[in-house]
Length: 329
Image (cartoon, rainbow, N blue to C red; front, side):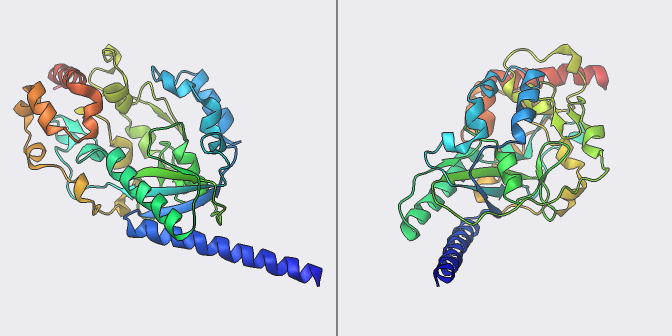
């Protein structure tokens, strides 16, 4: 009888965890998240030596903040007291139309994720709404929302939660939708039913490695100090001359490794109005970019992630492209 009671209790507990988890996922989808998955909060044993090696080899470049909070990056329980679960979510940003295709080399190009409003602001609001929903419909919990702004290894948690696999370009890839996604997390002290990781479907493909203009990618590793996104956003000093003619016409971020990825043929346009480019950005031509003023920058990118470079940074990137474009073409 005691054994039966224990069995029934366990079954009931599992049912509750399953119900809670499904309730949270259903609300996440209603809020606009494309995929949602759950992992049990704990130490990322596999990621620890990888992160250490990446840092030791200087692949973080001048991003010294990556050296800080090493333990917290590997264990969410150090970020949220009593953490039991990591809820990973993905939010689609694939645009209906590409602005100034970089293969044409006619105008400076910015990464697709920066076409509209800053994703930190847009997705964070969705996360907070989901956290409020959990507190109203399940109960008061201790939790925090993260959108690429804290020491959280978001790709690792998304992989563990079954949102996709980490490709050779170090991005999360979903078999049915590709990789044009923002990742976000809710770390909370609520026990939930964990999902499992899926297999790697990259196979023998090396398109991202072969296409990278600066040879920043080796299988499953990205040398951040060579990545065009790093050079045009994170790097505050002058872009090293060795990259002259190798950054194509990217002046904020880069999408090359995603453009060539076979799985992105399944990408579907997002439905988030905030991510749509404004009409002025859509109409920008070559002369508009090279003659960009601080005033226009402030107006054009007021709510955009491009603000991170500040006017001087974007101007540096445009000038670097312009100088080496002349030499190359």
